[in-house]
Length: 153
Image (cartoon, rainbow, N blue to C red; front, side):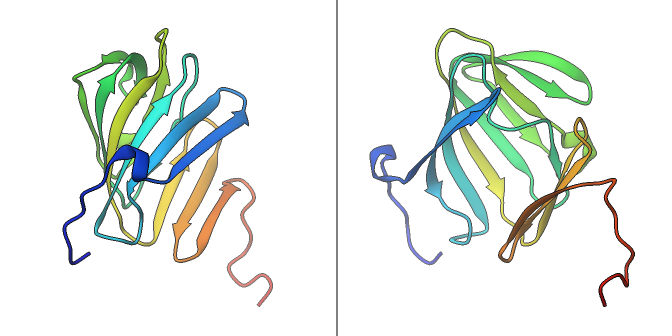
């Protein structure tokens, strides 16, 4: 991106995800993927929900700043409470695995800043899945459904 970006939340595109059991969020894309070397979004998670399953990335680091609300952060070190004013950083490896769940009475809101490397791989330790993201590929697989390297060639 070669220009300064000045944007208000109400002018950013909003994505609302619901209907996935314990997962629901509203996301405003402040700096969408592909525009710069990072990605930025504003998330709101309703009470009792999480935005994403427990996961970590191999290429992209993530950083959250909690704006309002409270929740529980699951990491390889266990669970801990988080609340407005907390800054969270997740390295791009298994030690950065995380899941943020809203445990409060109101929406949990946070800014999410990520590096943006194409292509990225995400691992989901609780469900045995792997996700491949970028370059037109956005797919998730079970890690136990491996095929041979030359199968189908």
